[in-house]
Amino acid sequence: MSRTGNRRRGRPPAFSYRETWKGLLRRQSTGLALCCDQFLLELLAKRFGTPLYVYSASTIRSRMIAFDRAFRKIPHTICYSVKANSNLSILRLLANMGCGFDVVSGGELERVLRTDRRLAKNTVFSGVGKTADEMQAALRAGILLFNVESESELSALAECAERSKQTARVALRVNPDVPANTHPYISTGMQRHKFGIPISEARTLYARGFGPRYLKISGVSVHIGSQIIDVKPFAAAMERVTELVRELRADGHKIDYVDAGGGLGIAYEERDVSKFSEHLAGYAEALLRPLRGLKVHLLLEPGRFIVGPAGALLTRVLYRKANGGSRFVVVDAAMNDLVRPSLYRAYHEIVPVRLASPAGTQIVDVVGPVCETGDFFAHDRELPLLQEGDLLALLDVGAYGMALASNYNTRLRPAEVLVDGKSVKVIRRRETMEDVLRPEARF
Ligand SMILES: *Cc1c(COP(=O)(O)O)cnc(C)c1O
Figure (cartoon, rainbow, N blue to C red):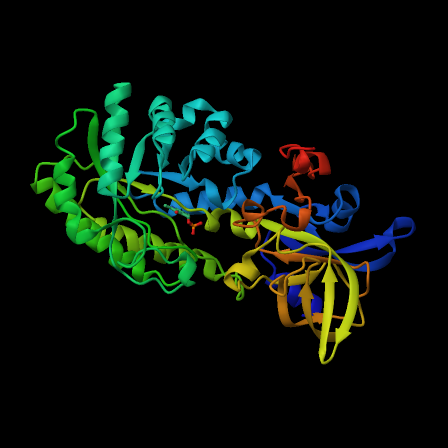
């Protein structure tokens, strides 16, 4: 196979190279160009401008279907974690597949309700700092489950529920004290982290749940972190949760739900497509084995796994420059558009939208225009020789990409488009200067 053939096989299915042609009867090849499904990315960039987030609906669907199938042996509901990518059209797409949702703020709850108010019945509310207003809104909407993270929060929820005379179904989020081998900022399941209730103290706190009339203890929840590749920590956490469920049932609680959280990682660097189903099956087995015979309804909160590989960020090369020994490629996207490399030193593959031949390569830093040394997408990356004006695609940015974008340096956040079969839709228009300045006072 040729160099380009290998590249093609290595791409995630959403983004692959296609040969393009010109001339009468398409006789003359013009080389290989990166596509999202049927669409040439260079045409999308021309039409919608850069930087531009492009998502593949078919990839989101197929990942959701695969995830769902992996848990077919047990009654379950997938509650997509809204914070990974909260665009209303993405929520709509997932809702149409019968998905539930996991929200961590009143704002995210509002997004779900605006997609369809009936989605509340499959929505769980997580997070360490829910305010009384947020709890009220969730009670009013009639959500499935509150994942409560402290004794004080349990009291606050009891008060809210009492005031509104609406029953709150509750799971306590326990902290199983298992290390997950991931970036420290997105590891959450150890005793020293702010999340959850130490599993050793859970039974005592659950006992408090017997008191308030409008609280209904219904489950146990756990979430140990994000971008976790090794499935063993998931199994360890689930074993501890299972043990707790048995104890709680013995104490007289009715535990209907186990919420396993999210956190399954994706292959940002090593993109061997064949490992995908094995990895997913291994994850399902890690959760299901401890649950065997327990008779619970399993809730799952995947975020990154569903949408991560479905997105690319298109950016144009503005300038090339060399400072001392370093060569820089300055692009028109920046850390405000995609902060993961700056925040977590995250790796994102960067590929040219058009493969040039002959292909020389160069070791470069890919950086944005923001006034921070931390504004980079890659350091010492081997990339094909690039010209000013060339288009690049940063891959696997569907999760925690646009969701974390900001207006730092008064940059307008990018547009987002969704490719779905033969259609391409702008699901968020590019911000205007007016959008950004409107909330500010003028003197
Ligand atoms: C962030 C989060 C998730 C989703 O995590 P992913 O790594 O994107 O799957 C799920 N549940 C809770 C409680 C979270 O905070």
